[in-house]
Length: 232
Image 1 (cartoon, one colour):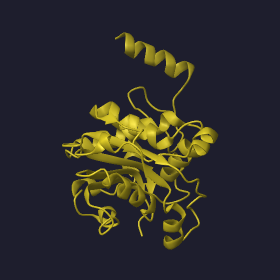
Image 2 (cartoon, helix red, strand yellow):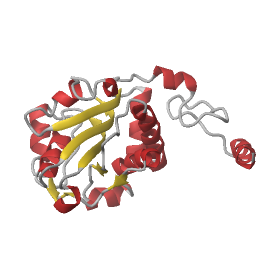
Image 3 (cartoon, one colour):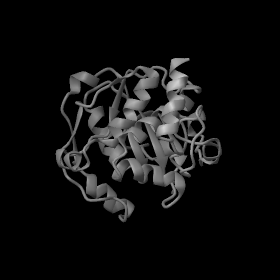
């Protein structure tokens, strides 16, 4: 009762808005309004996590157990702007909330069963200092809040500062992140089932490099979760 009353007061003093359309949210609604939630271009990959277009990105590079992205990423659309907001407009809490909502949906399919640990794709110290946070870690925190799965952000280290992947072709993207990551705590993940989390995947080059490094720990199962996926 107190919580509901407090929410009503806060909504009056500081109204919440939908992360996609910007319209004021009803009291019982979090982050996305009903219409935007329905309109989100979901991939539905979570219903077939062992074999889908995202999973096929990594075949022949490292063994992937499960892979799913929440929605299709199309630049300059309202859903894509949510990614831009938390990535470049200093909204880390939005990344957490979207991670939580996506995890809630994925959990209905049993996606997290058997997963021992969450590993977010790391940023370089320079990029993290500029941004003030790692948006992928914030997504992982949202997932962990729902699932209770441990986050291990001290397993991979980004050792190479790379320029934006946005305007590069597939070959250039692969070269841009080649050798950009190193495994610094192999004992932490050896023999475990790891969920590797990123915000958006296009070519899969970044996640491939991370997966290859994680596999060096030995006897590691790797699954992948992202919010957005740019369909080829």
